[in-house]
Image (cartoon, each protein chain N blue to C red):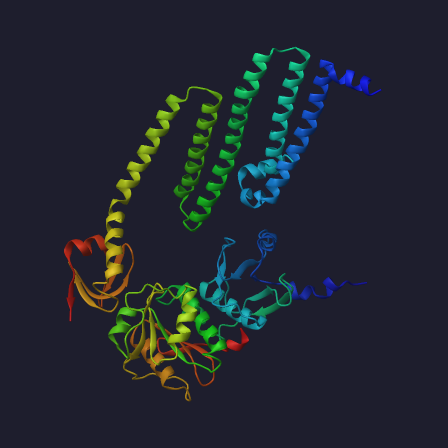
Amino acid sequence: MSSVSERFERLFSNVDAVFLFDPSSSYFERFESIEDAAVIVVSPENDLGADNHVSLPITFEDFDDRVHFGVEGALDAGYVDDGDTVVCAASVFDDEIDTVGRVRISSKAHSGVYDLLVNSRPDETVIRDVIELAIELGKKGQKGSPVGALFVVGDAGKVMNKSRPLSYNPFEKSHVNVGDPIVKVMLKEFSRLDGAFVISDSGKIVSAYRYLEPSAEGVDIPKGLGARHMAAGAITRDTNAIAIVLSESDGLVRAFKAGDLVLEIDPEEY
Amino acid sequence: MMDDVLDLVSQPAIQAILVLFIGLIAGYILGRLVTRLLNILGIEGIVEGTGTERWLQRMGTSTAVVIGRLVSIFIYVGAVLAFLLGLGAIDAGLFWSLATAWLPHLFVAIFVLIIGVIIADKVELLVSERLQGIKLPEVSLIPSVVKYSLIFVAILIALGQVGVHVLALLVLLIVYVLGLVLFTLVALQDFLASGAAGIYLLLREPYTIGDEVVVGEASGIVQEIDVFVTYIESDEVEYIVPNRQVIREGIVRKR
């Protein structure tokens, strides 16, 4: 006679690390005593006080997306190594953790999104806020019709010196932070006009309607993307800023760092 | 029949027993009601995680139950006193002095003590949660200091209620608080000055992010202004200038 758990035994043998995606505190406590594998918590904030923690930029719906980003973060942080075998546990159908996947880590599938979040000049939470903002803007659009937007985050002083105003800056002498709830409404209105939003390292919206004039020399972005993406790639090459672009034509949100495209997400999927 | 009952009730001993009986029932019901009320008001959520609550839970009870019990016990004591008065075991003067002066004060004292300990526990928890990010062993001292300061104040109030002379302890408390205020002022002096300057800088924005400025020795592009400091960056270095210094030394804006 054999039981189901015996049949699944191979799933859990020779595991180097266990990834818990958004575990509840009681769930996490059950794993604290594990000795033969490292326990890595992947969640937006490290509120459980886990030793090994990877923060996710956005809550991904897809299990494999979540695993992909979680593993990449752990790899960058040095919690796991190339070739390790890990088990990922996440909640897909219910609020409880109900899905388990066995993954072999390969550093080839490196997209740089974790590097974008953690090793960039602006605060991690600021980048996350801006990505969420772009996704929301992409989902709803401006009165139903798709909009495009370009956010330049970080190194604001330099960015301001490499750009010029297209119009009166609505954010002058205001102290609006991208994390504020009111921003969603404001940006939706302002995104109607062309130009980039400039956001400082700490998340203050410095300006809207900026025309970026970096030197686009040597910027290599995928063909078929428009002027907005080219400007985004170029400004991140020229300064230490990162750029997050919502494409008007295909509705995707893309992130650029140091002139390279590092993240591409479809707002409809989140 | 009716007369018999009335006759019986009019006897002082029976009256006393009746009072005792009603007192005991009222005490029990009121205690239960208080516990219920506290639970409805969500006391569980407030005291959750505090040392007192955990200790009580190990003893098989909870904060709400303990406070309810306390209310019951005081009504029991009151009822017993009334019973003794009815029997003539104590005279009326003693009864009234006990029931109006001593008993309420004792009740308030114990109540203040319990609430004080709970609040102290809760504040300790909040402070230590706030400081969780700072992994310094010295920092763990702060929550305890806050907790015992609060318990000290609670004990002072409780003792004052019971009528113990607390003047010496009060002087100690005042010296302690004054010392704390003095230390904080000295420690935060620079921050206060910078904060005041920062508020002016943020409201009036004599310079903004992207301007090229010179403040004292620091020259470069303004990257960030917050309440306390201004970040000025040149090609090689980043200056973090306290806003106090910005106001004191003036700003040179390059065009």
